Length: 603
Image (spheres, rainbow, N blue to C red):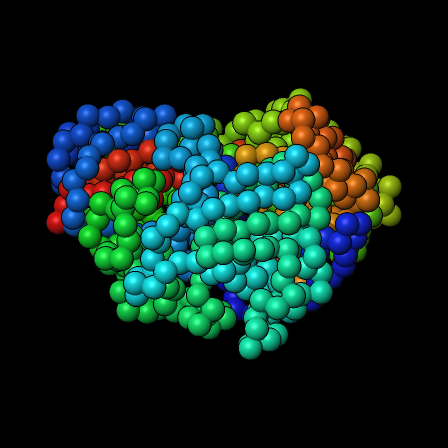
């Protein structure tokens, strides 16, 4: 989903219609819609024998156990965009922050599509909406405490939402759904504008008592409960907040707390929080005694350490790199320790609509026709890396239409004649030059950029590859329109998973004109199509799911007509499970393993 660079997002770029403000995202990804097998102790550096099969973790729990204790060890090649729950948009971070940050709602602990069902977390029960879905009431469970023993209150949740969504100094990395949807909040300048009364004027949320929140929306929104899964609903006491520096030591509401401070680029360690009450929290097993995260480790090293048993989980959740992928899939001694689930993540390339000559739709269509989809799939590892995509929405989402294929070609190699026709049409018969951005520490991103570079060269489109670190990519490079324009990033490699399982949860932050913002921007194509904008405005007022699905289909097809995204693959990840890892399964709500369920049989 997103990336990190600790700067403020700045004021909204535009407002429209019912007063929605700008939003943000993250690549790769966001709540996402998504999430064993080890056999005889032959892989993973030792551990007990586990009776499992290839890809069993996609639909079943592998190595189930209630054993507590030990240390669970994570590693990642980059860093968090921020471990602050209010300032993050990466799917792995939304998954991981649950160790220390409880939210109003959460997803059920279950493999398969059961993992997209909602259940209460901090909330006593499911939100109660009024007849037109413009008002939602949430009651908190009694007796909830922070790590210091102080009580968690409704006002703490309201404050957390305020700091992440409102004002010029709002935290930059996460989405801004609350800013868009809450009524009577247009003039609220955020909690940092008035230190004496940080919530003065924030009337979109009422807190009539310490355990009740009433959300007032500016429009009917039947999907609103999904918004309450976001880490931004994790409570923050105002007196503990330090803006973006709060990330150094987040006040825990979950089963674990920070052990010392977060060290950017180095480590984040967690230990048990003795103020957490398991009786109030049926969704977190909290099996390990300690959680350790190593940051900035080379991907190939992570892969080798996973197989050697020196690391338990690759925190990024995107699977092993290309070098290890082929080895694991073909090695019978390792294959039983591998999952290869179909995720709801789309890997793609943005085509910017502002940078010349790509501001001409015909030039964008030339890119679409020249793209070699077969090569793009091979960049992601062939069939084990993903299924070729011709539309935007993953098949599991209501309204997804796999028949959308506006740029067909023989053997998916590209239609070069059509590409040349489009270049003539846009006044660039000899081609043109642009740059493509990619995350340097993600080998498949770079391979995707190279595959597209080679395909476009066939029709005279010269592409320079520019590489950037993951932890700043969404916020300050690809996610900064000014940076994109200054560096001629007409193309950018990206990835997206649903913030929740619907067309709105998947597409709004990458296609809606209101989602364009100055930093942390995820509508990287800067698409501002009035028809698509109107459809997004309309769909949130529709209660009937089938009608909403038909609108999402129209949005998907029109976006493809506008030629703003080159779909590469609907991703399949190759995930390795060491034999000592317990309760392993792919979680559809987070597009990776369910981190809260994991334990270890090692000390």
